[in-house]
Image (cartoon, rainbow, N blue to C red):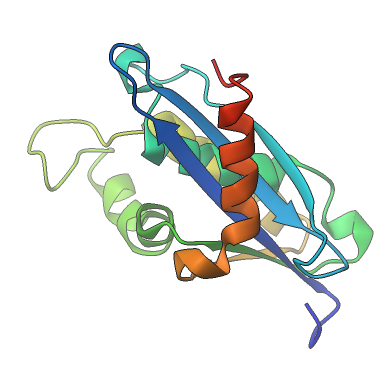
Length: 169
């Protein structure tokens, strides 16, 4: 980031194409020294690893996959960064990571909005927490910023490109 070279902004997005009987989801994240005019982008498919495979191809899982992939992507602290800023248009990700996750941990991953049911995407939330814990152990902070979709066009375009190639199965 221009005002602090030790802070790296990573723009993350997820998307799902709903076709009858065959939803496909993908994720992407972008970052780069040239701002977002010419970003480096990485994308991939959403894989079924949760407790219910029917949940695999959802927009929420795609958004979380993007964040987890960005956190795991490289050894950010070894490159001189002290803060990784996850920038996304996803209310689900930002609200979950900054507010809801505390409640979920206290309730044993039970949803306050769906009494008696487990939080959706628990496997990815647990992975996200573990990655943040590892980075914190290396002296790195992780922040979450929510932005308007039109400010997240590079990662959104990368997701759409991946989905159009039909390689997110």
